[in-house]
Length: 152
Image (cartoon, rainbow, N blue to C red):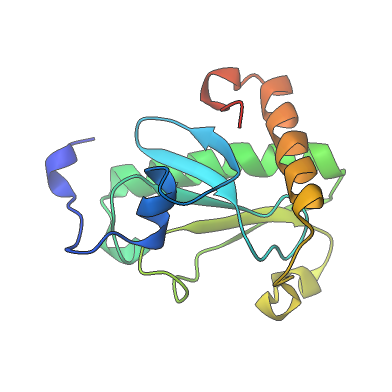
């Protein structure tokens, strides 16, 4: 991937501030081009956001190579979510209305109701979130992705 194809806007997005460590995040994945951290308003426990390190507003503006990488990361995380929560499916949604920084939502899913953002928990318990992050990290490591899994 050619880094010159992407550029950040004049003001850092909230996701860039999380990636840069200015704001807290429960990271479950880090690599050269993307990170994943838990959503602060999960639809289901283990709900993660896959985010490119570079700021791009909409997925339709992203280079194909970046979209390919992000969906590969989301698929890897989705498999770990299915394993960790014994879910029949992993949901994948690209909405893009909440934050002007491309991000893919992935989480364990059991039925169509799990695709409704109205079911998001706006105030999840902090310990439950920490436990979900650890559970997902452990599943990613068990699936052979230890090199991309941060300790916290």
